[in-house]
Image (cartoon, rainbow, N blue to C red; front, side, top):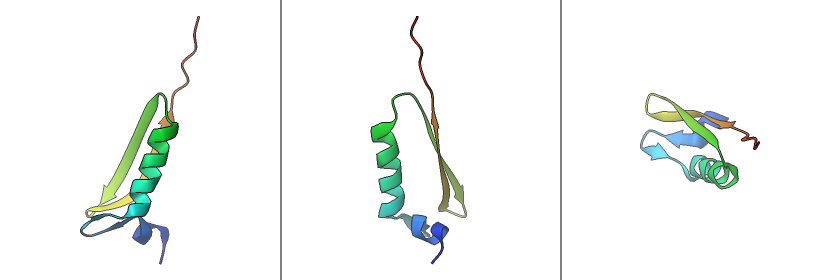
Length: 55
């Protein structure tokens, strides 16, 4: 089974993909999480973190 098959099924997101998103949310202070979907399947999860600098 390849990585894409682990992330999703035709019916929805598998627990592994949810775990990846949940982990990213718990560590992310500022930024974005982007899911790439093809044919109803999650194919990729991108996390972009922003660093806020104070004066």
